[in-house]
Image 1 (spheres, one colour):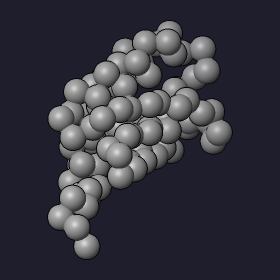
Image 2 (cartoon, helix red, strand yellow):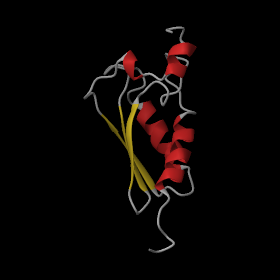
Image 3 (cartoon, helix red, strand yellow):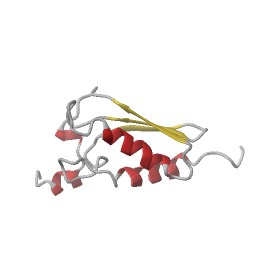
Image 4 (cartoon, one colour):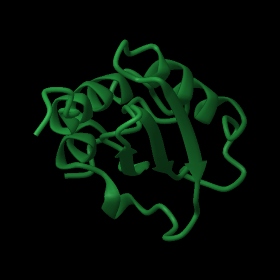
Length: 108
C-alpha cells in the first residue's frame, strides 16, 4: 500500500466544513444541514463530484449556488477539481433537514 493513498474521510470532513459555509439565501441554514447535499464522491485524482439538490427546481440561486459550491470546494488545497450535479430525484423535503436545522427554524 503506497503512502499516497488518499484520506477520503479526512478530505470528506474538509469538504463538509466548506459546504457548511454555504447558505440557502431563503433559509438561514447552511446547505449541508438543510440536507441539500446527497452525496460527495472523491476519486484518487482528487476530483470531487457533489450530488446535490435545491429546495425547489425554480430556486432563485439554481444558477449561482452550484457554482459557489464548486468554487469553494475547489479552493481546498487537496482538491484538484470539483463538479456539482444537480438532481431532483429524490425531491428535497423538510425531512432531509438535520435536527440542528429544524431546531434553528423552530420546527422542533
